Amino acid sequence: MENFDHRFQRTDQWKPVYSWLETLDTDEVVKSKEIIDWLTENSDVREQLNSRHSRYHLMHYIKKCHMKILKRKEKKKGPGFTKNVSVSEVKKSEDVKKLVPVQTTDFNFSTAVPKDTELYKAKQTEALQKYEILVELEKQLSMHFPKPGNIGNKGN
Image 1 (cartoon, rainbow, N blue to C red):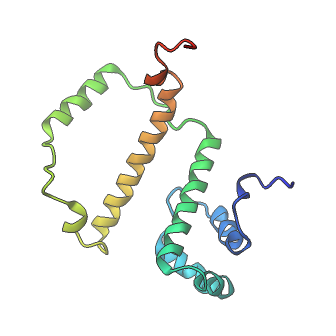
Image 2: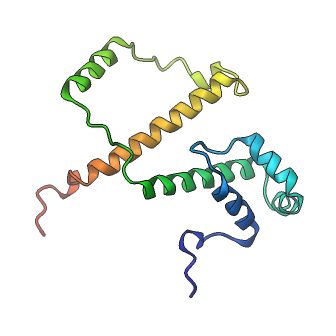
């Protein structure tokens, strides 16, 4: 069996897309307009993918793949948290959080702001970045703390 590294699940129809995504030199997930432009330039790939997948699926899957590629690049760079945070900085952060009112559940930002606005896109990007930071932090912390289910279980 051949070794395909991270390409083990990639079918032939998606290989040109992966190759393109890997050549992009950006830290942000590829935008829909960039995808459309690339597919327009590569009409044979577009026709093949459009024959099997909906436009929504294409956009969603390509962005998801690019996000995975970006995460893999970040892992190669090493930990993203190089700044040591002091206790006083954490305290200040907690104090600020106490001043910010908690959002009520009857307000839904995603339905209040039109999806085609720059504000919506900025908030969506910000939310994704926060999520990625939390996932990375969770990975780093999990190395130092045992999982709750493993506490007290010494081979019983």
